[in-house]
Image (cartoon, rainbow over all chains, first blue to last red; front, side):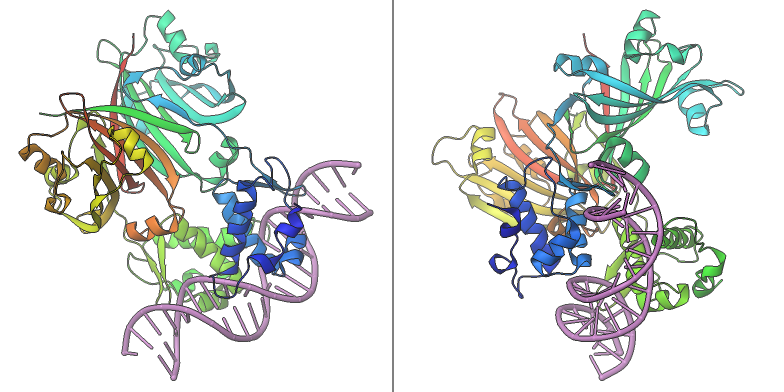
Length: 251
Length: 251
DNA sequence: CAGTGGTCTAGACCACCAG
DNA sequence: TGGTGGTCTAGACCACTGT
């Protein structure tokens, strides 16, 4: 069946079934669901959709905008609107302290990192407090986009005291592996998890639409001695991640 | 300073600083930040904003729509657009199995529930599997909107085998308290946490805009005997909740 | 009933991409 | 250079709220 036929308004557009942009959005969702609009295929141009459906382009755009927000399609200026490939969800434990790299390897996924920042800096007030720094101390920072199986998964900003990580540029893949070699691998961590709507900049790096739900995780990790070793603030794609925790009755 | 003066475009609208709806959104955010637009106060009507800023109403709406999405303002048809009161964030542990009611009481917050569904039903396939039911077994379901301090906080759908909770209408406040009285309080649970953009229906119940980020939590809890006692699927407001987990190095 | 937000249109111009 | 999405306008009508 041809997509233009599938969208002919006689079959689905009615005057009394709510806003037309909602009806059109539903129709397009159905087309994706049924495979008439296959992953990576392009939708008809907005002007053509308006023509076919006998709606204005503004209304068509409003319908598509919602599909973009829910991650079903992707728009590229000058190029077109494309159906997105569904991405598999990954589970991560919240009871065991594991490294991203090791975690993905266990799942058979190749990990890569794109470096966004890596070096020695003056700490932010947050970092001074969390890491227990003295006045004038500097921090090592690594900020990277983490990918698994070719898909961007998370943005990770780690800050560590200089004596724990003196040479941030030595981090190539696994930070924890490197720390282990220096005998300063953390043994315990506290994580705070919340849901946020992604800002434009972060969304772009993670290859999702602005406003998509993501998980923000702030982790403070500790050495055996009880000293703080690391403050990491990460943003995970909400559509790609499940965190799993085990709870026990508190007495 | 008057809000109309604050929004006079000469002061902030420029031709070359990106889209005008973005510039207007930023200006409005600044107004809220500086207190010129106080919580619960109303913005000028859209038509008046268009007049003041010399933009079209469509552009004004696009700016406001983003503020709605990020939770800064709230629109009520026929009434107006209002600055939202910031709501305090609540932390919840992911290592200890606590009840919502008990948890909030410890923080000095009054909890109430609005019942959305409560009774005995035929189980869904999900529930059959998760609860280990036999063919023909029914389940007790309770579905409620949980509020704390007068604010809606979470939607909670719990399903339990009939012999664990035979009379779902007996649940008034704390489910766990009731289970404890029957000697079937769970001692362990596994939770899966993910981030989602709220759908219209859920968003309305939680008093946030559609598309706002929320946390979806699926919890399976177990009795001392190892038997599954409860399957609960909840949706928490992302802007009100932080979950906190403690991790240990896995060996 | 007056005023507010919600939907919708037709048409214009800009910014970007690909052949 | 032609086609695509991105922004913007002026104006209309509908649906809901509060008085």
